[in-house]
Every structure is written in structure tokens, then in C-alpha cells.
Length: 115
Figure 1 (cartoon, rainbow, N blue to C red):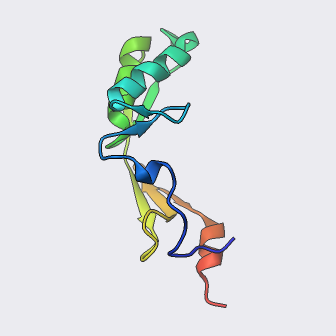
Figure 2 (cartoon, rainbow, N blue to C red; figure 1 turned 120 degrees about the vertical axis):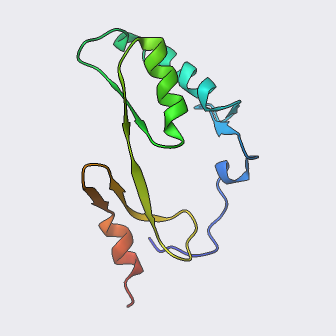
Figure 3 (spheres, rainbow, N blue to C red; figure 1 turned 90 degrees about the vertical axis):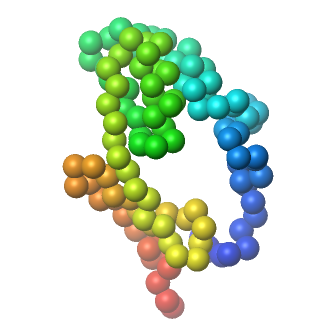
């Protein structure tokens, strides 16, 4: 697998700002709507004492809030920052997260090594 600047646009990259994809490929009106629909799918977790909703800061919080509210579960936040690859747009080579967590995608790093 080689990465190039000319990769085809994904369907999600062609969406208008503020649109989010549904499982069926149709855009959600907003992230709150996505969270409400996700909560419907996760109904078996409602009110459980051994479950929490973990929202990823920034974009994931509106989704997580709706899930936690509808399922009557506690909500916690996990702050994550993408480690992007310069010159490759959204390609990530890893992530940094709260609590000192570091994740590196070794496959991506290997592909980026000069040959």
C-alpha cells in the first residue's frame, strides 16, 4: 500500500460543511442527530451500571452527549490529537491522547520511509 497526493476523494470529502454520513450513506443533519440515532441502536445499554459513554473531544462530544442522555449513562471525555503526515491531508500516522497515551501506525510509518 503506497500513499499518494492524488488519492481519489471519498464520498465523505465531497459533502458540504456541517453534513455527516449515516450508516446508509446519507448525511445526518448534525452530530446531535447522529447521536440520537446511535443511541437507538445501543438501547440494550440503557441504564446499565457497568457502562459509560466516552466522547472524543471536539467532534465526538455532541454525539456522545446525546447517547449518554438518551441511555441515562455517565459521560466522560477523551482528548485525542491526530499526528498527521505533512503533505498528505487527512492521513494520520498516529495519535496522542489524554493520560499520556501514544498510538503510532507502524504500517503508515513504514510506507513513508525513503527506499
